[in-house]
Image (cartoon, rainbow, N blue to C red; front, side, top):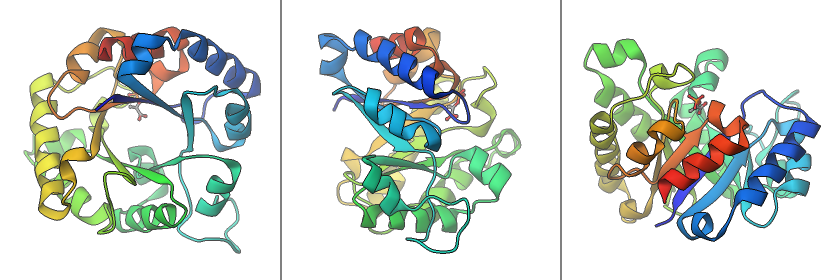
Length: 247
Ligand code: PEP
């Protein structure tokens, strides 16, 4: 299984930055990295067409969210058929920032994933506990419930990627320890095994302040099949160094 190295640009960048950053990353994707990793990026939606013109042969492009609806009077929303139509392969769902600032529930995330499946898009479904939930010893209950409710029954290893992102580690510089990550990823794998016959083949990514300095340890932790990278995905040298650490 190759490692999946995915960048979440969040609400950052411009057309010029999209072109430059992807150009720099593409020129660094050499044999060893391509043998060991797959690459994916989630730019802001407005820059997806620019990304699709500059992504080269190895970088897939996804959108950071999608509507549960196929079309209609939903101002500001982007429908899964549109994401397919423009040429994307993936959609990021249930990121903690969407849960926190847009009130997304597990049920909504589940409906969005189903809308993505109809278009043959891969749903990257984010789960993760807050700092207070971890301190209260509830991390496994919280993540278990998110997996139970946000991942549709029709999920398969081909249409779904799970991203474990402890909320307290996102954009904070704090990273979960390799032991905690190993324990949580193995728990997620068990939860998937209770429902899906191809659970062993699901990609489970770690996300939360991944950077070149901690990537080798995190990416070589059991059941970690790649990384979802925020801040460090905005710098080509850091993104490439993280991929290199995976090899
Ligand atoms: C993210 O937003 O998915 C993320 C992991 O961010 P960061 O790497 O900046 O913590």
